[in-house]
Amino acid sequence: MKLGYVVQYVRDVVETSAFYKQAFGLETRFIAEGQFAELVTGETALCFADESFVTDMTGPFQPNRPDAPPAGMEIALVVDDVEIAYKKALFAGAQAVSPPAQKPWGQIVAYVRDNNGCLVEICTKVVV
Image 1 (cartoon, rainbow, N blue to C red):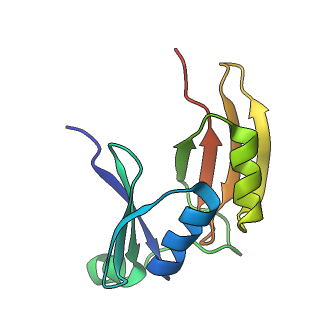
Image 2 (image 1 turned 90 degrees about the vertical axis):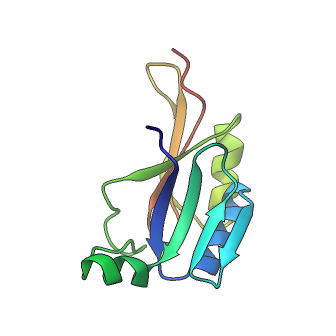
């Protein structure tokens, strides 16, 4: 088994895809009728789907919102230069959570919240 994709349910798929392009440089592979999008992110895809998809399956759910506490998950994006990527994300409208810092295991990590309020980790590759 392997992880195929991660889906974030959002209010506006097109807007979120555009935000991820501007903030993180991620290209959109496709958008289906404004309801579902897949980004070019490597082997495992990051996708956005309209919130109605999850409510149709489960009923009420806790949506991500910029003015509410973040959900208990994050999206991690691996970059070569965390400082530059962090500043680019902030310039594009991401909300600062934690500036770049080196962790005891050597990885450099920063956190922002995206346009939906979801946590995004901007980090260097973990070397073990």
